[in-house]
Structures are given as structure tokens and as C-alpha cells.
Amino acid sequence: MEKPVVAQRGPYGVKVEAGKSYFWCACGRSKTQPFCDGSHKGTGLAPVMFKAEKTEELWFCGCKATATKPFCDGSHNRL
Image 1 (cartoon, one colour):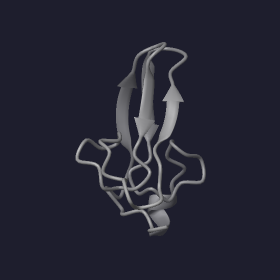
Image 2 (tube, one colour):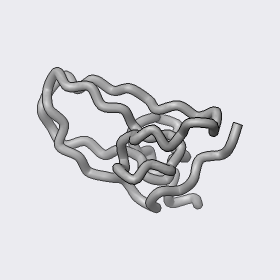
Image 3 (cartoon, helix red, strand yellow):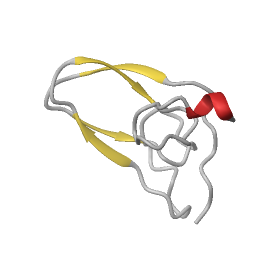
Image 4 (tube, helix red, strand yellow):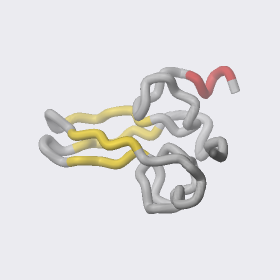
């Protein structure tokens, strides 16, 4: 299994819509950050599904080192 690539040293603020499913990129290779575009194929990494319960702005991890996938936990401050 390959290690994730740091896509951004900070979170992505995204307005999510209630009832919609999102697939957070866990590998860091996606061109549609913070979401998956299939670039993980062959890495041994897989996206993380998130289903929004309400419409709101959330902060998705950009560094891929978070312990609270798919959300930012401040790990980018320690890179």
C-alpha cells in the first residue's frame, strides 16, 4: 500500500447538501480535491464515503494525515 500524498497543507471548506453522499479522496492524487476522481486505483488506498445529514459547510482534510477521516483534525500543523 502506498502512502497518501499531501494535496494541501490545510482543510477544504465545502458546503455539503443534506442527503447527498460524498467520497473524500484518501490518497491525495485526485484532481477534484477534496473528493475522489478514481486516481487511487492501484495504490491500495480507497476513498471514504460521507453522507451529509444536513446542508452546512464542513472542513475536509487536505493533508490526508487526519485521524478523523474525512474531516480536518489539525494534523497539517504537524507536517
